[in-house]
Picture 1 (tube, rainbow, N blue to C red):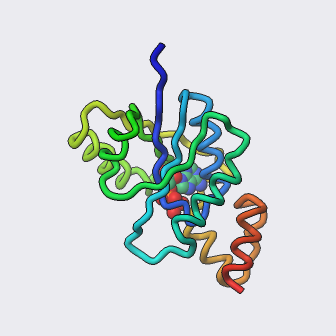
Picture 2: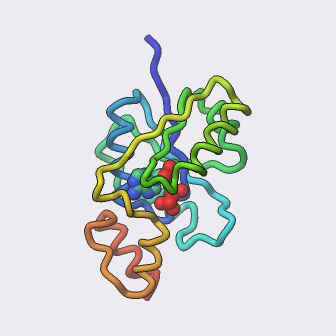
Length: 160
Ligand code: ADP
């Protein structure tokens, strides 16, 4: 039987409940979901790639078909290496659409055999991004309920 593997790529700096909402949805649809942490970001990340991956592993333990990995370079090369068939991406608001549309079509041009699949999170997470979480945490605001408890703790020790 054919088993469908999807890659969910991102910076996850840090993982939020919006990411987890998408992982839960992806894990229901795909046989295997690989959460792929982008190692080299344009901007210096708050958490190192190893820290971002470690937090993700911790908070995705409950899903036996979810794996966390690190990647670098061209996403389609990584997708090919992993023998995956799909790229999972989240769409929050219209503002995500333009960039995601461009990326999906570029990736299709580079690798026609891989399909990008978009999923929408619960409305309560549709305004949530790692960037806003980092900003609020760095300014001392509460991010309780927006990220897993483990990430609340890690953010506290990182910014103080
Ligand atoms: P961000 O820094 O914007 O949170 P990431 O690079 O970590 O972004 O995001 C990886 C993927 O997860 C992207 O497809 C992004 O659209 C999606 N994503 C991020 N936050 C959410 C959310 N709150 N709900 C649904 N999808 C999300």
